[in-house]
Image 1: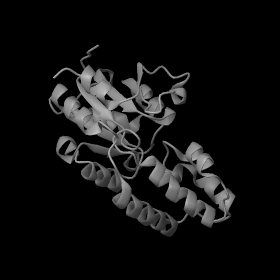
Image 2: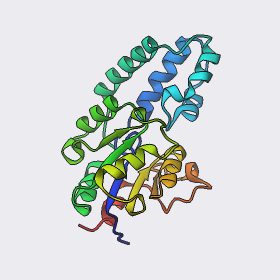
Image 3: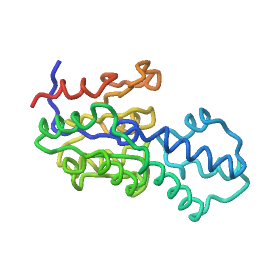
Length: 219
């Protein structure tokens, strides 16, 4: 099946790059060091698809410490060190980005809930920077991050395409809600294959491999 969209908007973590296990591992370590004894699985469940600051109140309650800028800078430094050493692109993601870029005549963007410096670094590391150029957006730079639609609305406006003509690629329920509330068509990327993260959400399609996306976008 082939479809036509005027723009394709990608999430970053877990869609373009396999960063979530790395970032979650570092976050789990620093939270445990701060006194919050949660498991890696619990950490992933709480924070996946969100900015750390979105859970400020819970972090401060569980650790008994304020979430300061110094704490965030130290976390970012440890996280980025691990990412630089270990980050890999998702299998087939570069080819899917190239296909989307060709299909839309360059109207693609990355719309992430992570801090922009991290997103830019990861896209460069994955060899995707020439295809995204300046079309990289972070929820940190907007009044509201995911699950609100602001970052997808900003990306769609930048590429000059109405959200209803955009395809959003997401891997979390938080991001799917953001894309749907923006008015876009949303595909759920689920390399594990079970798709349970999207249950109850009207995603148009769930797919397991980026090759499926590349094949669905005619050149």
